[in-house]
Length: 145
Image 1 (tube, rainbow, N blue to C red):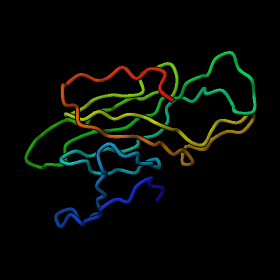
Image 2 (image 1 turned 90 degrees about the horizontal axis):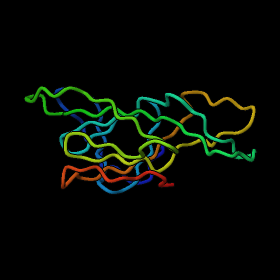
Image 3 (image 1 turned 90 degrees about the vertical axis):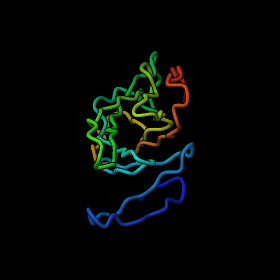
Image 4 (image 1 turned 135 degrees about the horizontal axis):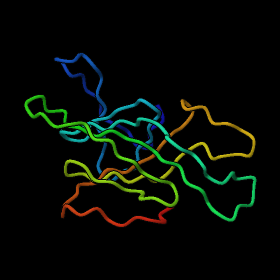
């Protein structure tokens, strides 16, 4: 597992699954299908929908963009909250989205694109920061690296 930070792990006795707890404000790297808990929320990397990023070995007039999808939902079984799809972008779209009182910020998508080399869906790694949405307003993070 590629994590930028040490994560605390515990076992949910009802579900019998291992749950990793993300530290707020610290970059965490996900592989496709990997999900982690943030307080009472679950966050999972669903995959990359579109990837038109400029290859690193080519000179482009436009940086391109990749659409990175995460799902976010409640872990509390007493509350019926729908799972939401968040779309984060590497280039022209928003690099942050809010859901259920948290902001998810895309900070990196790997591997970098290379000319003539297709990236397999399972090879993607997305790094995000999760922060509390204290004022209910998502920051404008267009153009953040």
